[in-house]
Length: 87
Image (cartoon, rainbow, N blue to C red; front, top):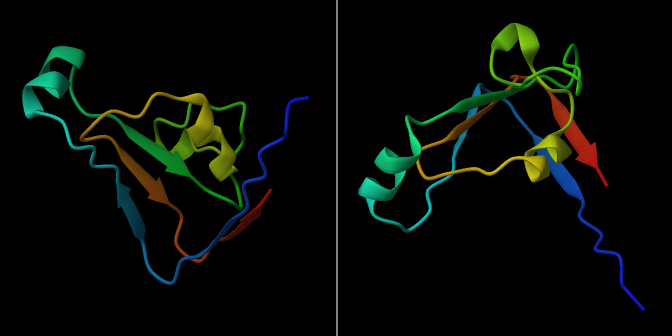
């Protein structure tokens, strides 16, 4: 029987938040994969159907991050003043 994995995100941002995902790999690995990408999350006006790649096309939920392949150097920018409570 498969067990469901429960992940709860609880995050409060008081300023403009930047999460820089640093993975211990050589920088040449990222250069081969392309330039670093930035993803935007806006818990107020975002929409999970958006691309998440610009401020005006931000995602609404942190859970969208589980659907992408973050690479070294990629950034996730979170809308200031947003409180994220997700299961």
